[in-house]
Image (cartoon, rainbow, N blue to C red; front, side, top):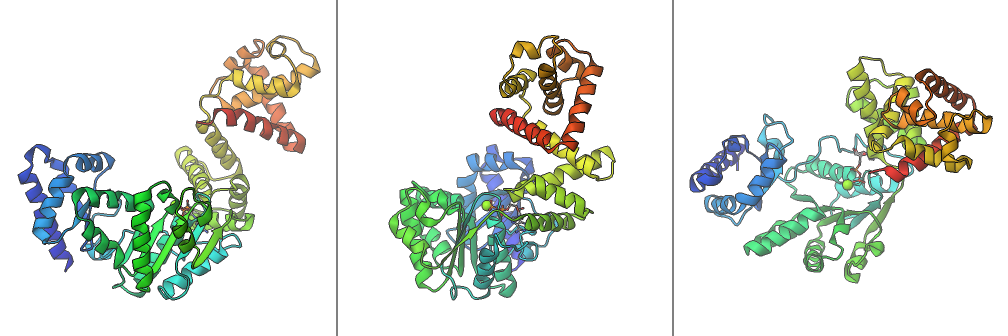
Amino acid sequence: MSAREVESIFAEIVERARASDPTNARRWFDELRVVRFDGGSIGIGCPDEASVRFLDQNCRANFTRIAQQITGHLVTVDFLISTGDPRRPIEAMLPGPALHADYTFDNFVVGPSNRLAHASCVAVSQSLGATYNPLFLYGNAGLGKTHLLHAVCHEIRHRSGMASIQLLSCEEFVNRFIRAIEQGNISSFHSQFRTVDALVIDDIQFLREREQSQEEFFHTFNAIYNNGRQIILSADSPPAEIPSLEDRLVSRFNWGLVARIDPPSYETRVAIVQKKAHLRGLQVTDEISEYIAKQVQANIRELEGALTTIYALATTTHEPVTIELAQRALEGQIRLATRHISVMDIIEVVAKHFDVRLTDLQSKRRSQSITVPRQICMYLARLLTKHSLEEIGGHLGGRDHTTVMHACAKIDEEKQSDPKMQALLAELTKQITQTFLI
Ligand code: ADP
Ligand code: MG
């Protein structure tokens, strides 16, 4: 079917849906686009989340009925937020899933932590069903599982425009299954999933405690496997550690290759920051990428977030991206995450650490044993709260703003010259922020 035919069918569906249910017809229906049309289901791109919800709640049955009448097939209808460029030719979206344009093998940085996962994904995409089947990737959040799954699909599509691929989250699989039961068209559900060349399901741990879906997935798995087609799965833990997953699924998931993804090493993190910056056309010096890689260690999504924050700050303040600006931006991030911290929260943690009384910190006493903890309170209050210098001084024995400023500068200086002070501040910040992270 040509793109023009798809578009004219879709226009007719929308027109009839409007006419047959005028109460729920909306002007913004003009903005609906077809983003997927693969025989089994029609993906309708909507302008935003609110419109997706509206359509889901009020229009699904009507749209489905009309789509089935017009196409003559038992198609299902999915409403999605349309992120694509509406001018993009529809051929580019046919057939199969909408892939994230950036999630390709080219844009994936390979290091010791993900080498096996990456190599097995490449191997599988080059000969479906012939190497590792199933391929099972697991690792913590933000380590690149979804990226690799999309990269496999890009590669399959690149090699053969005809290959049929289903790529979806496990949650979507479960929802579509439930909907198929509700609407009594389970056979179209079967034909959508059991006949594909590659079934790629992200976050399969979502199957836990969903007995009926596990049963269905078991049969889906067998059908695809027995046809010699490819199955690729991702999860946050290895098969045997997914709670309440049926043994027969655990054993099947172990039939092929199970590849773990670990947190990236420092060198890999630096390379990832550079790759992401390059993708966005940002200039980053080695110093900045190394700084970010040192600050953010466990999660690549946060690594990207740090880069975004730094450039957002540079853009809004029209400042060049320097280390000093990067530091300010990332400290600002702490502040965002911890906006409920009060000066009292800080005083409590510091008092406990130095084993001094709260009232002493808040008094006018000037002995050395009190002065240093009090200055640290001021420094941290400046960093972690939005209070003014006066307000901070007010909480700490009624000092004026120059005293607070002086204290902050002094502690900052010590932090630069004394690793012990640096570690202490990091530890206190951790204690203070951890308790109040939202
Ligand atoms: P997961 O699915 O494991 O939670 P994602 O695939 O969503 O993680 O990855 C989070 C972000 O990190 C994505 O933007 C992805 O592009 C990026 N990312 C992860 N690993 C790499 C890598 N090795 N090279 C480049 N980008 C990566
Ligand atoms: Mg993911």
